[in-house]
Amino acid sequence: MNNSSLVLVDGASSGIGRITALKLNALGIKVVAVSRNYEKLLQVRQESQHPDLFFCEAKDIGEDIAAL
Image (cartoon, rainbow, N blue to C red; front, side, top):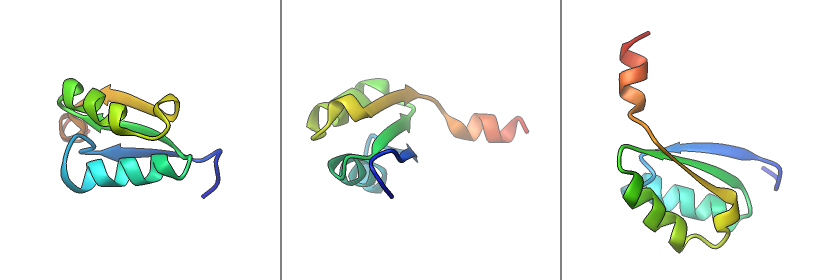
């Protein structure tokens, strides 16, 4: 991946998703962090090295998949 990459990380407010989002961001990769809890996403964004490359989206992707 390069600095123009964009990665969507589901479950980014905690656990493996959180760690993955922060590691990718630390590499200078744009991250779209998705979770049901927007406030927790904002906390993770504050911890990131490049908050300008960290985008938060409150969403339950499971609901969208179930609707297919």
